Image 1 (spheres, rainbow, N blue to C red):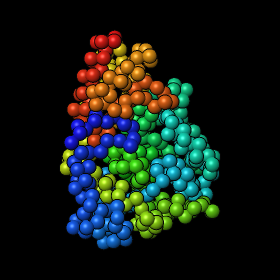
Image 2 (cartoon, helix red, strand yellow):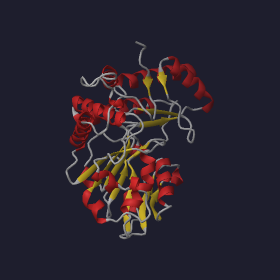
Image 3 (cartoon, rainbow, N blue to C red):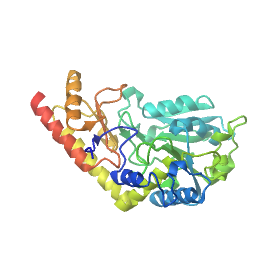
Image 4 (tube, rainbow, N blue to C red):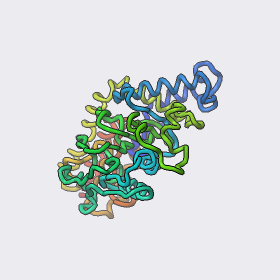
Length: 362
């Protein structure tokens, strides 16, 4: 078998090798059915069992109570930028958003199609290098909810504490969900695209508090497929769901439980991130653009002293089996995404190469 790459992609991202091997072994015949999961009816007893087990394991990993619906949806997290105001505004005319980077900005733009968006705080003035001080946030009692992006994939800025909120709290956790324990009870709604820590692209999970959903009327004229109540009533099968992505997510949940759950993953992820940040901070060659207290464990951008060296750095990395280290086109530089499935060995390999490159070109 071809040696696996050190995959630092921001998404779609690395999946655990154990999961891919199990999926390979079950590709043509799942559980003696003579069919692949991707071929079977989503209404079949076999797939319903797969779906129910996946939801059960996801709930156990995050400690999600029966007070919440868990929805397995299509459309990506970006589709939720519109679905959230449609479902949660009720009679309110405004919602509050904290702008910490590219994905927050996109969420704000889409929500603005449906309501008045109050930008409660923004770090745009410092090029999204930090989380604005919570004490300075401007949230009004009439705001339907407060939206944050818990981890900005492009800028590498992360909330390390859940902020106190005077209105229902909503979080885009696409790039750090399942990387550490989270007190779900602090949130009215959590949503996450799958393609970073959950599974392959094509699946989005929404965790929404039942009482919030029941108390707020969906906006008139809204598409039924954006109505969380429709999906909750049908157990996420109001239409044909992304069955294979759901199945693979279930395998990832099992893998996470075998690793020791989210407390164990937090320790692993903290160690990986610290290894890379130490290499950056102990160097006069590499630098981090993010305030130390808000640095992401998942997406670590860094720059070289001269951007003309970037191509050589990337070329050398690829020659050593390190893929997808180029920074997002909007910010440049480098970015190492080190989600759950990226091993300490991959991070160590990157750090070793960084030292080698600095010695040669610094």
